[in-house]
Structure formats: C-alpha cells, structure tokens
Amino acid sequence: MKRNKKVELPTVDKAKNAMGLIQENVTFLAFVPWNGTPIPCEIYMLNTVQIKSCGDFNVIEKALKDSDEKKLSDEDELDAIIRIKNTQERLMKLALVHPTYDELVEYLGQTEVFKRIHETIEKIESDLQKIDKKNPERKVVEQELELARINLGFMFPDDFMATITAIVLQRDNSDIQKVSHDMLLEAACLAEKWHDRPSDHISGIFTDFQKQNINRMAAVVLQEFRKDQETAQKGGSAWMRSGPV
Image (cartoon, rainbow, N blue to C red; front, side, top):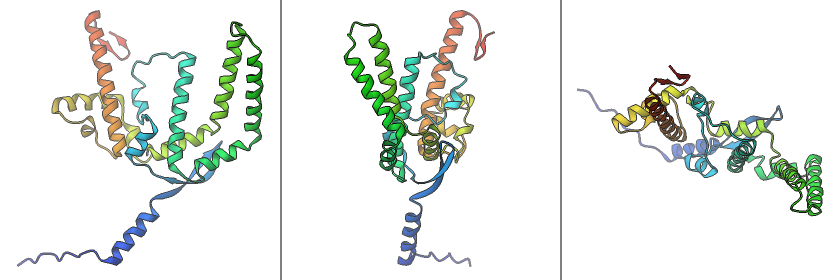
C-alpha cells in the first residue's frame, strides 16, 4: 500500500530565511555606462503599476519598423524626444537607490557645464527683453532660449538613461526583443477569433508589463493592416508592405 508523502509545514526559521532572501533581492547592483564609463548603481526593480505611473513605454518598437511611419517635423520630433526623456527621468527617480536621482542632479548642478549653460540662459533672457515682439529676430532668440533650457534640463547622458530604462523594463532578460510585426499581427487575429488576448498566442518569457505592451501594440498592428486592406480594395490592387503589386 502506497503511503502519502508527509507534508512538511513551514517553520519560523524558514520564514525568517525567506525574509532574508527577499531583503537581499529587493535591489541589485548593475554597472551602467555614463558616457561610456561603467559606474556601479543600486537599482530597485519596478512593478507594472510603478512603470505605468512613469509614462508610456513601448518595449517592442522594433516590431513596428515595418509599419507606415509618418514623417515628423523637426519641432514634432524634438517634442517626442522631450516626452521620452521626461518619462525616462520619472522612471529613474523610482528605480535608482544609490546613487539616487536627486544626488546625481545635485552633482550635475555643480559642474562647470551646468553653470555655463545657466549663464547662457540668463544672457539670452536679458537680450530677449530688448527685442520688440514684432521683430522677426525675436523668434530666433526664443528658439535659442528654448534649446538652452532643454540642455539644462536634460544633463543625463543618453547611454545612462537608455540602460537604466532597458534594465527596469527587462528588455534584455526576456524574449520581448524577438517579437516581430508578423507575430503581433497573427496574435491579434487569433485573439479576435478566440476572444482572448494577443499575448496568449505568443510564447516566451515576458513580464506582466511586456504582455500588456504586446496586447496594445498588436491592436495597433491589426488596425494598420486593416487600413492597408481598405486602401487596396479602393485602389483595386493587392497591397503588401512593400507597396501595391
């Protein structure tokens, strides 16, 4: 007669050990490039709600490169970059444990570059007061002032911000980089047929946030596909991503 395996109940010692493991894995150390030089940073991994509170992150933008892209003006492109930088900075405020975001800002504020840009802003503001509002030259000076303020506001190196973002979003520790445009389109069609989520039809290692991103971007890809089909029907020719055939 086969005996049932005895169930071992958790003990107080094991519970304490579990808390120790949790404490050890709340944050971790990573070497992050700062203008090409790796610096050690203690990072706290954010959950889905915390990430979403920082703004709109698309972790599968490579899968949309085959989609039709609208050409942005220089002004619109600059606005898009500023929105991305603002979102990345909000993420860093939550994720950086040591050095903290505020510590880095304080340090940058003491650098000669920061002081020089600040002096430039003061000079431009002074010059602007002397220029009549109807003078065409005023717009040029206003643009110079805006650019100087942007330089002052975004002092973090691009490689540092991009790496912190990639770490927290788990871009390199999951299968999200393998998701393609065709995968999203197929998953969206299957989800519509079976009344579930596109992420249910793409196998791999994904975080909850990445699955939500898959669902959202699959809907975008499907919408674009249907627009292409509608254009093809109106034009009387078959339409592929490379153009009509």
